[in-house]
Length: 396
Image (cartoon, rainbow, N blue to C red; front, side, top):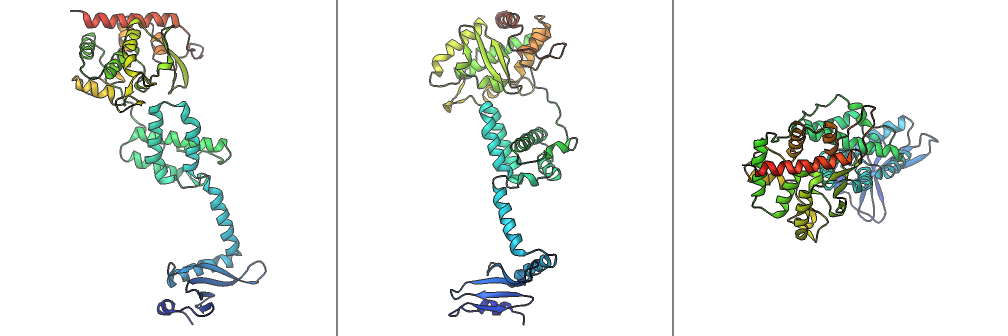
């Protein structure tokens, strides 16, 4: 006879364990300790011997739910599956997958690769993982993540109009999947099958001043800047050296060769060594700045602590303070400013300019320039550029 909810609820502990039968092999075992457990009596498909499968505790599992689980288990048995054997296999798989979830492998990949990255790249990657990947697929076994599942995750950012973030999230996920392939935890990269499935981010051109008269006003504003010497020096050297903002703000004192008058560093974007010749003006700014940063490894330390570099917003906020809007000039705009004026006003060959911008320039035979190629000419160009900016700033 089938049990009722009231019978199940009011069943009491006795001096020994008492089984209360329901239907189709389901029973409630009331233990002498007072605990209650749902069980299913069945015959093993392999040898037809009687066995008992534990469904789970009451009241966590109600009578209705216990019956639903009973029916699911009986269906498995009818298909020749032993529920005990399947439960054991599932637990083994869970344990095996515990070390192969997306977030676990992402952390392994991050720990392996991040020592080679700039601070800004580390921050961007951590942001992508924490906000756009791990919340949705972090706990998933990496081998079970399908292209449609990954696409649905990426579309969350795309549907909010975050096209550049979507692109970065796809790239980051792809790098993690390829890392998993390399260590034998994955057979194929699901991100490869998403080509053309996402909206491409529009190319954004950074605002820049390229008219000599406008550049003169900018240089005068920088010279009269009333903020910290750290930020003012960052502004001056951004104009003189025109490297990427992330590389500029994380410049390290150890990377400066005072004798050779060079700044040597590893370019994050191209993963290549790069040499920036330092003009006499640049050396002068660095030497004047050095006493203010003796406790820091960074040339431009953060006001919040010498162990951190200048904020990503440091130069941008300074430009706004001086009256230049986001449509007038950006930190990245110093690069376009130099590229334009070095070409149009100082007549330097584009290949020299592109190489000094740390772009992946190739010669007519397709060979990438090495870091020392055209270095004497580039030294001349960088000094000429500094002299040109001084003349522009001082002319009446």
